[in-house]
Image 1 (cartoon, helix red, strand yellow):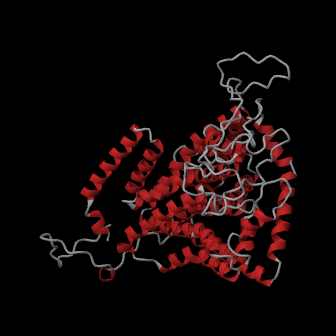
Image 2 (spheres, rainbow, N blue to C red; image 1 turned 90 degrees about the vertical axis):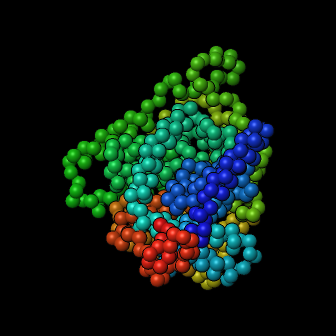
Length: 543
């Protein structure tokens, strides 16, 4: 199959030229959405030609494209991108299958969590749709993990190159995050987000980077800081410092907990290599990070709002945020607890995101946040001292536990896929916070039972035990701790941290070299005409 696909390069090239001309024509005709769709199709087609490109594309899509923005997707953004990633990873395995075969153990690991979800759906049957919607992300991430393990074994330097590239990319994101906290706006996200809770009108004191949500940006900053620290590339302390700044600006307490535990694991695993020079470097990095967080130039800080009845301020050269935020696009789904069909839910803002105050706009309002300087240090301190969110989490734990312990079948097999969505839509929690359970482990138990939770925990434990790489273990500790405080599955930027840990661990595994099948076990390739090899006229295997 691979030989036949690669044997039509000329026709593919002509098709690509035709599609480029089509996109240009649509753009010239003013059909920019159709032109973008064709352009994305061309780019994805180019990516699908090489497994290495697929590996790069997986992390670019997960870390760069926010799921809080709807570009006119046919369904919920998270499920649309999940489907794209599934197609990429599945085709990547097809391209490699003729040489590497199908690895039964990796396939079993990829199917473990989806099969637990299917079992829960059969025991507590609510129709085929909840099963499909609940299983889809788990199946996608399982196949992605399988693809990344195989690619990391084949080409470890590429995985490390991807990780280091994103650590430097995160420096740019940290600069953008600093601007967000200074201007108290989220450029692009305020204009394109499909729900007001994903704009700065909801909480303009915290940065969201490129994720559209402060918790997911905190996850990204945490991961990039740990990757920079453990891989130790050239000038590693620059991305490490930048992402510490991003961690503070995001105000994400769960990421702070994950970072602290990960640093403790890092110190435990590297205790013999700790030196006074390293301690001094740590103090210097902390001092620089604090200075950057506290730095607030007046040129970028919006002026305070005038008192009622006061004259409007004279316009100045410094940028002042608009008094009105653009309304969400008419093509985006209306704000609702129910995502557009066929999916059943959108990623909801966690209770860790501060609830809007009395002056915050209600859904549908176009009022922008009041201008004024924000002290990022005070904001970070308030995130520690504010007990409201912590109380909300205890409320959610009680709700989830009551649903889990309803009877023996819900303890063992859960309430079925998407049971948490059904509960939150029809009953709800009613404490004024976000309608989410905010705990990946308990939500998994609630939906898929003790069988599913045991599968998830055993999978994480197996990854930590088998992947002896320091970066992989540190990342796994961090993300395993953080997802105790929010539901992870539909946030691709957060799941990508787990995938990156798996890829880095596989790249450093003692058995990381690719294991091609013996010649007599490979799939037969078509004979060439006139160019048969002397060994029997069979074309060489495609690498």
